[in-house]
Amino acid sequence: MTTRDLTAANFLETINGNEIVLVYVWSTFCPACLEFTPTYEDSSTKHPDIVHGKVDFEIEKELVTAAKVRFMPVLMAFKNGALVFKQGGIARPAVLEELIRQLRVYDIDSAAVGGGTHA
Image 1 (cartoon, helix red, strand yellow):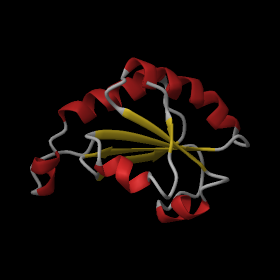
Image 2 (cartoon, rainbow, N blue to C red; image 1 turned 60 degrees about the vertical axis):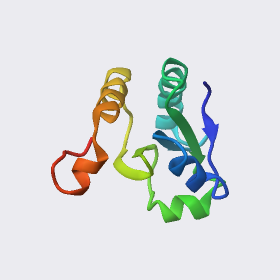
Image 3 (cartoon, rainbow, N blue to C red; image 1 turned 90 degrees about the horizontal axis):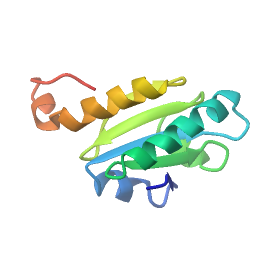
Image 4 (tube, helix red, strand yellow; image 1 turned 120 degrees about the vertical axis):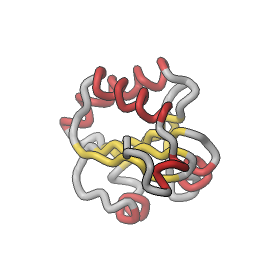
């Protein structure tokens, strides 16, 4: 599966309508983003069951502000509609794979009552 462009209009529907959603905030003016984008695109192909969404920092100002993103790149992960991971910077392919592995086993219900660890 390829990455999906996320906008203010489809963001909530996407994160609430899918078990696991990765959200990548990027810009064409961001050198680090240009370095990370191929890794993210490869991940979307390798893991078609996980939604890989992209938010364009320059276009989706309202969404970027609501997500409290000030620098790029930023990677967020949602499981069952809940934000469970948010970090800035570039992730090597192995780090992204480990995040996905953790997201697959992460029990959001246990975490809600204090029994789990955030991904």
